[in-house]
Structures are given as structure tokens and as C-alpha cells.
Image (cartoon, rainbow, N blue to C red; front, side, top):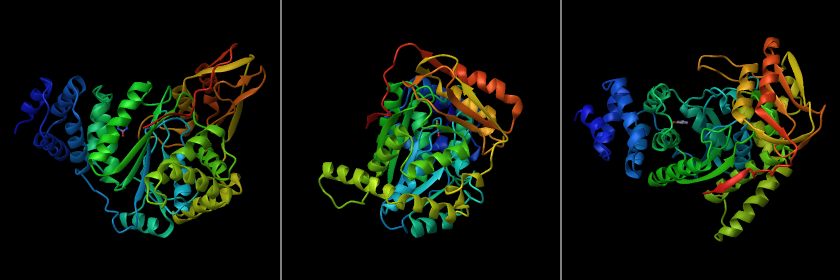
Length: 439
Ligand code: URA
């Protein structure tokens, strides 16, 4: 088999065989196939597409390129949830303890943030003492002991994707649904869970900015998951503005705790409960056979574990199990505090009518909360607290948001960029629902 022929075949629009896909993934991972041939194939795929069978095979070949977690020693169905990434998305920190408090087994590996998009591991790492680097044995033990774990992806998880993503990033071949879906799902499958819930974000702060692409990506990932024997579902959710009030690592952890305490921001709370309800209904936690009753039961038990404090207790247990100091739950000043803060004041009356959420994420990055390159270090206390949501009325002189940073010299530019990310208009605009579609 020759890589040249595989590229040529895809260039002509023909479907690749299982053997050809496997040959490419193995050869590229081992270094036998050079970057220039892999780039040519990626471009041919972008231009000619891949069918469902090819996309599933590519995903499986990538999954098999490195370590595959064996979670079979943990009793019951193992649950995982994935967000395609957004601004202020701290839902994982809420959903995991809710599900574990309900008896679920949450085995999750998370990523770090890059650019405007935050990552769960950076958020957790803002907790003093917290360790996100766990051995496979410890990862499994912790799920057995307390029902949940969240750790950084192991170094050898889907090495094919690490190499391929770097190449796609610099060859304008990221934005193909089959390539995105296989990249995401290969990591989910290798992480070993039986139930995979996908939160596909859609809007100005999301990878998929338009609705049609978000639905297409969700449907493709569901097919891959189901073809590989995993229970997979997806929600399309709004990312036309940051989720909740907080953007930035420790600020987001504190906001997640507010939801677990039962007084979180409305839209954030709604999405956390909906994602949890999905996991509950998809899992083996209920004996109820009637599906509509199972949904009713899900919402009821989720409310119960929040109002009784059981979900918050589980969160504290999780923080301590991974070496963290949970005292910040009672006293937020235990967390590192930013040296400077600045209120952003509205200079006019009106309604918030538009938000460029990616721009807000980049402001947070500029304040120190994110990385521009993978090697950058981040400031756990930097970020933004946003007081207003789209559709809200704003008065001149009101505080729209507060910036937090250790870098005094970026405050002026950050304020200017933040203000330019929002539009205030005279007419009231309809609020877009946070849950856009259930798939
Ligand atoms: N996220 C991923 O993990 N892979 C992609 O290709 C795009 C987004």
C-alpha cells in the first residue's frame, strides 16, 4: 500500500477502505508517513468529505493509536460528558458531583484551555493542592471509592490526534466535520466510558458558530459513539454569550460552587440540570421503565441532591480525594486573589443586544486567565465577572462587569475590548434559550 495512492483516491472523491485508513493512522503515528503527505490527505478530506463508515473507522484507528482505558473493574455504567468548548463553561464541575451523589460512576479526563476557550483542568488546578495528574490505577480507584474523578488526559491518549491536530491547525484543515468528530470521539472512546453525553456549543463563542454545523457535528459524533457500542447523546446549547457570570479559572470554580449550593445563575443552573438529567436517563441509575417517568424522576432527584447539600458534599470529597484544600467552599479568600480589579461602567441606557463571546474570552486571556500558546502559564485569579446577560436592561452608570488581573498595564486595553464585544441598543431583544436542541 502506498500513501500516494490513498491521497489520490481521496482527491478523486472515493471512499477509503478500512485498511487504507488504518495504514495512514499507524504510519503517521509512527513517523513513517511524513507531515506533507498527511497534510495532503487532510486537505483532500476537507474538500471531498468522508462517509459515516470512513469517519467511524478513522475514529477507531485513532483511538487505538495509544492507551485505551479499561474501566471494566468499576461496577455499573461509567459516565462521561464532553463540551465542545466555550467561554465561562464550568458545567462539568457541577454535573460530575451531582451524578456521583446520585450513585453514578463518573470517569472523566479533561483538557486544558487554549486561546479564548477555557479548560476544566485549568479551573480545577486553581484549587490549592489539587492534583490533576493521576496514574491509571489511582484514576480507577477514585471512581470506585467516591464515584467520580477528573484528571488530565494521559500523555499517550490518542497520540495520532495530538500529531494530526497540530498539523490541521497550521494547514487550514481543522474545519471539517468528520475530522473534528473523529478527533473528539477518539479521545472520548479511549477514555473508556460507556455513556457519553456531548454538549455541542453553538454561537459567537463556540467552535461551531452556526446552528446547522453544530447539529451536523452532534449527529456525526452520536453515530460514531453508537457504532462503537457506547450510549451517546447530544445537546446543542447556546454560546452566544459567556455561560453564567464568571470567566476565568478560580472565578468559575466559585461560580460552580454557587450552583451546587442552590443559588447559581439561572441559565447556568438550567443547563447543568438538563445535562445531569440526560446522564441520569441514559445511565442505569433508575429502575423506572417508563421513559417519561424516568425524566420526571431525574429532575426530582437532581433537585434533591442540590437542596440537601449532597452534591456539594460530593464536590468537597472529590477536591480532597485529589489533594485539594476544600476550605475555599466556605471562604473564597483562600484562593489566590488578583492584585488589581476594575469595574466597567455603561455609558448609556438600553438593552444588551449582542455579545461577541470569543472576544470576551480573549479579554479574559489578556488579563492572564488563558494561554495564547500551549507553553504559556496562566494566572488562576484573573478573569471577568459579568453582571448582565443578553436581553437585560442596562442603565448609564451601571457596572457591566469587573475585570481581575495581576497585570495593571493591560486593564485599559481589556476594558476597551470588553466594551467593543457588546452592543447596547434601544429596543428590547428576545432572550435566546440556553438549550437550543436535544438530539
Ligand atoms: N476539538 C478537538 O478535540 N478536535 C478538533 O478537531 C476540534 C476541536
